[in-house]
Length: 69
Image (cartoon, rainbow, N blue to C red; front, side):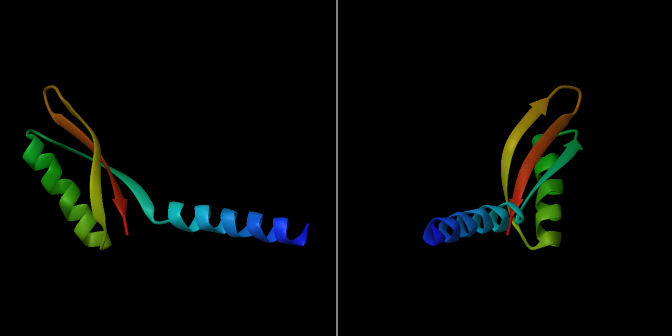
């Protein structure tokens, strides 16, 4: 039983620590390149890398990305 509690605690801490390093950011611009440049600046300021999760193009581009350290 003690081992089960320990494994559960380790698993919970692992999930919390990995989730704390992810951050979602958004940017809008008139072009895809402009929106991605804004995301890249935000990632650089946070010392993180980024992965674009979605982009919508209408009158303007709206882009969402996940920053990870």
